[in-house]
Image (cartoon, rainbow, N blue to C red; front, top):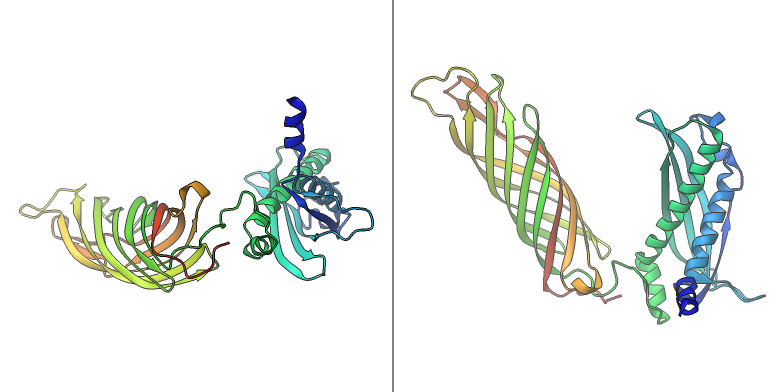
Length: 346
């Protein structure tokens, strides 16, 4: 039983694909340009070569003697440096990997990154950190290999199932309904926590959604303002590949809320307000599916938002102040296809 488990653990992920790799740099000339060069004795190319050799051994089989490999990986260290980070250097390695098949045709171009922070400025510790960063970059290569559309297509044409991929199966629906929860930060007069939620539909070239937001602000007299936003927004969307989307647009929002005075209030006046605010937004979304979730997809997004015509007159404190402003949010949500994708499945 233990022997069987050992064989399963040792078996390559793609036992029917042979592969070989070359690494262009062998010395530390790229190690630390302009940042603590005396602290790094790492042979970056050697460490990247060693890390990628280990990773390739986990993923593929070694070519037979005198036989051309099915895939060749040409690895070039495009960046390797020590960068000061909050008092401690951060080791970074970036490797560009060109993937070619047995005929020499380019299958994909991948960029892999690895990092490691060091806490003592000693040459041997810096060298060890570059070794760990190279291992992280090699692991990043495995993830990018499994989630490259061109590589997944190359494998599919040969009847080979890809492992640990987020992009296999049907592509995103041509029309999807989605819901997103998006916390972040907003700035009117000061930096505040903000919370947004979205419900809408998105196509290959457009997005329409309802948006709820809760933001805060502080007036010039240090009064606290809480604002609730409810609006509708529309705009164009561009899908890049099967999972990534860029979008932007504009909308109208009903804003209501309350100013809580920190100074003596004028009698007979209320701190409540209500008005309509135009808005604009721009952001990106990555939607992916783990096999058991299909056709449901998870969504992660980053977005910037701005509100206009946002100044409100508060007679209660005799001041004019914005009740909303600029916001940056990071969202997580789900989407479900209403119309299946016109792209073929991977």
